[in-house]
Amino acid sequence: MKYDVIVVGSGYAGSVTAHKFAQDGKKVLIIERRDHIGGNMYDYIDENGVNYHKYGPHIFHTNSDNVVEFLSQFTKWYPYEHRVLGKINNQFVPIPFNLKSIEMLFEEDKAERLKKILIDTYGMETKVPILELRKNDDDEIKELAEFIYEKVFLYYTMKQWDLSPEEIDPAVTGRVPVHISYDDRYFQDKFQNMPKDGYTKIFERMLNHENIDILLNTDRKDLVTIDLENKQILYKGEVFDGKLVYTGAIDELFDYHLGKLPYRSLDFVIETHDDYFQGSGTVNYNTPKEEDAFTRITEYKHMMNNPKLEKTTIAVEYSYPYDIDAEKGNIPYYPIFTDEIKNRYDEYVKLTKEFNNLHLIGRLAQFRYYNMDGIVEAALKEYENIKFK
Ligand code: FAD
Ligand code: UDP
Image (cartoon, rainbow, N blue to C red; front, side, top):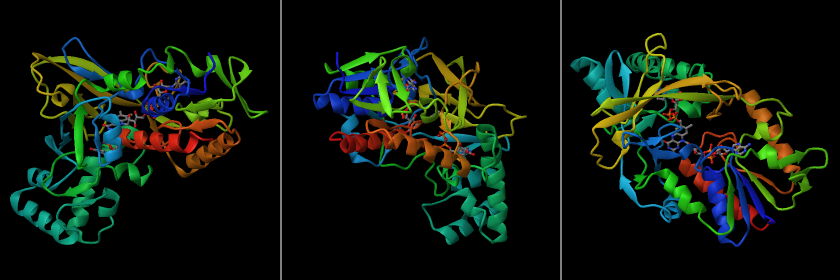
């Protein structure tokens, strides 16, 4: 079989692109090193009847009509609005930190004063990143900002990244701004729904096409190699002149030629309990690691559509430095971007451009903190860019 397009990876980036090319009559080969499709979106029904997300909690939320329209070809949806509680001063309060969190943590007079000054300064229904709030000169806001910084962000971020909030890209803590509102949903996007039959089914339907072949349990290195000297892609040792769409880690593709890029990894410890374990889908442990070594606990039953189950499954989430050879922490989940690392990534991108048939899409390949809707959007756009090349 002669393939027009080889896609490495079957997450959203790879699967959306493969689907589009297949629809366009192109013969596509997907190479996936895991024993399943779907990348980090992979989910399955476990022994408790719970729809378990193998690679961490994934909640679909978007403002993009385009993405909803595209994915709705492969699934029906049910409504789900995610809520998160955070452990602060031994209480479980709403996260993002909001007016309700203030009411729960401060005595009534102080809470009223703090709420009023926040509303007067920033307005109701506004969002303020913690690093912005800390810049405010007002004494009372400053005191509150320091409280939130320490109790919501500092310990959690140290556990998650092994860095302080100032040391990571401000956009990362900016994902969870202080919310001057009583709206305690984790996301405010207009579309917040979960796929009726789970995520894996979306991928099965998207890839069920006569023009798509899928090789599971196969590493790219076993079939596709990069000839850096002649700027050629080889498939089974022969020059491949179709398109290679690569969605794995960019440094790995080039055999770490320009040095490694750093990632954070995770490990999930699964437990079964009776009935329900906690009050919301996710509970963050914003405490120092000496108190709770993990970052968060997810209870998947909360995310299901009206489940009638006796048992519940929880995943206790620990953060690790990424090391491909380690027993725990061998999956690159989150790119760590500092200025130095961004430069190294840019050098890799320059190298990519020297190949006229190599296209990189995805969270790892583009070294970006994409949500799934962002990846679907990016893959659809990139397909339009490269289909005629
Ligand atoms: P991936 O899903 O990682 O797919 C890459 C695929 O390539 C993998 O299957 C991998 O096995 C394969 N691969 C890599 N290298 C090779 C190789 N050499 N050979 C063969 N195959 C290879 N987004 C949301 O919108 N909502 C959420 O709630 C949310 N929660 C998240 C929680 C966590 C813990 C994480 C880490 C991310 C979360 N995201 C969430 C983001 C979402 O997971 C990503 O945007 C999306 O899955 C990225 O898709 P992708 O195709 O780029 O990468
Ligand atoms: N964060 C935090 N405390 C929280 C929630 C988030 O410090 O209670 C910080 C932390 O650095 C985290 C980042 O904000 O990595 C982004 O949070 P998000 O919930 O978006 O992370 P994800 O679900 O992608 O892991």
